[in-house]
Length: 163
Image 1 (cartoon, rainbow, N blue to C red):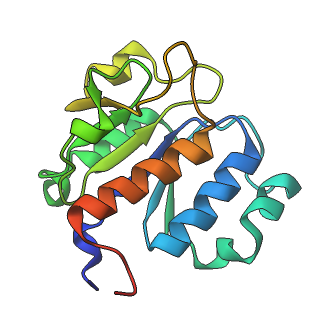
Image 2: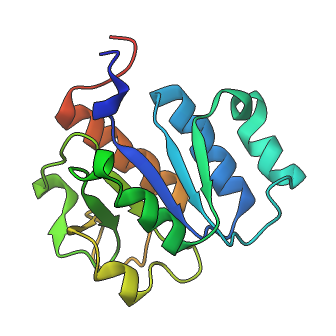
């Protein structure tokens, strides 16, 4: 599938850890997915740890930096994005990922490593999804959660690049 308008898009809400963002960017390049980075981030964007984790993939990444949540929402509310759902991946999700149906163009929203997503962000999401885990475990690493989710969304949508 070469039409990237149907691919899910990764949205990272104020990420804290440079290495996670670098790893997610690398994964996104391999899957052909765009990324939205919502500031403020917990590290300088040019930090060496970030560059080391992203390696030479950073030059090929399709990412947009948003100066704030409000700026991202302005972009999200443009007419060309009207059909895209905002899907929060959260430990507070009401739907398990294996029972959720992803749709073309979904924004896959991930919260901060230290605090997740604030309630005000949860309230504007069309869906809140959680990754099934063993009872009593708190959460997965952000990069791992993002990879699991992106794979499942692409599997459901049958939109793997390179096929």
